[in-house]
Image (cartoon, rainbow over all chains, first blue to last red; front, side, top):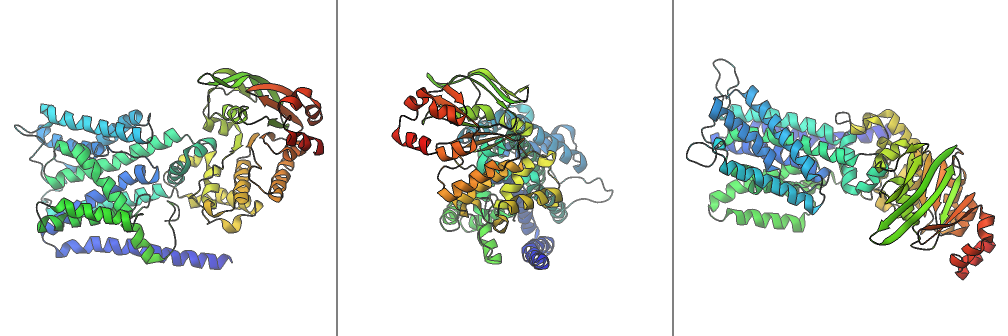
Length: 333
Length: 255
């Protein structure tokens, strides 16, 4: 009895671990065969996959509908940009941690305000707070390059290694390191008692209160942690994009992780990554085919997903892989 | 020793007095039932005791400590557990996940972000013991929604007990159960350790008269009677107001 259980566990580990290993290998090797454009596209994918994963902690696991997540993403990006613009600091080891710290602080403040509300009101408050940063970025001179909206002139970061300058592919690998590191940390979080408690809150907050959880604290902590990872994504984005604009703080950007997470499968660990992959690559090819109408293609894809793979493309693919039956949250993934 | 002291407790919703100036004390280990017609304020009283609602006036002392303004999770840590009238189990999560969540709730590691749930051997062991005791071990990987209603009741009550409560609040534990399932629940309650104080709200008079040592009667939010089952059956006011319903009289007399 005991051994069969263990065997089954090991089998399961292999069948479940394989897609992750395969995915990592693809991410490691593919860029070597791509041109700079393709490498850039893959960097973009990593950044948004990370952004969507951070969003998923709050949205998919804790069940909080946040529509202001770009605030943390943008805060990370603007920190990098402002350091370059005003202080000529481009050292990665200064800009990146500062970007994460600023994003975390913004999340810590916004969380206190937004978590006074719940449900649809939480969504509206997060939306309003994000838009507040957006309009701040529009109107405060210090937050813009001379004579324009947004900050230009960002370059790839300096790693502080003498005689070494980053190029596109090295930056990809830098982003990959942080992406994989974040995956490990977020995965640990999701399978921890904390992660399970978040799922509990999503499924029934009153019960969680009654059995001893301070649910406010849990939601707040998840919001702040999520903000930190969104900040990291924003930092990488600023370097990748060479340019940040108020749009990267507002609703237009807040929508992206939500769409990616829903498309890929919210509340599952891998879902947002799949969603981001589909989104970024479809966006790219559709915009090549039809520079004007590419959002139509994405919109159609989104509708099709909702109609035919409601739980997300990621979940759908995963089922094809394991044929394991329904997926109910964090612990079993 | 006093487990619970309710002093002049009131709760108003708009202009309605759901609970109106209720006072009573419960001793440690006592089995107390609260009965009353629908809308008498029984569940509201439970919500006040367990902290889901804040009272309009009055105080609640739990083992000598004033808990009137404490949130539910703090009261859980002090030793209150509750089985809800509408089953509160997390329906989409598995039996095991529900069990782990309940056990973790009063453990200091419940906020741990870095160690996998499955590495807490003592919690897993306790979950296994709990589920085996409830005869639900084989169904540990089933989502709760797949369990029968009786099994869900059993699990909800069993999980409440796995919190090692000092005070156990049972809100209509036999609602919607068959006679046999009801008898099972009665058995569980009768076999509880004597240091657990039990408060029961129920419509099932078999259950109430079988289990309770003392009965409180609520009517429109007011406490109108307090005594042992014989006294309550004999009480003229209770007969008129509550058991005036003929079925109830039959119940009371045959019980």
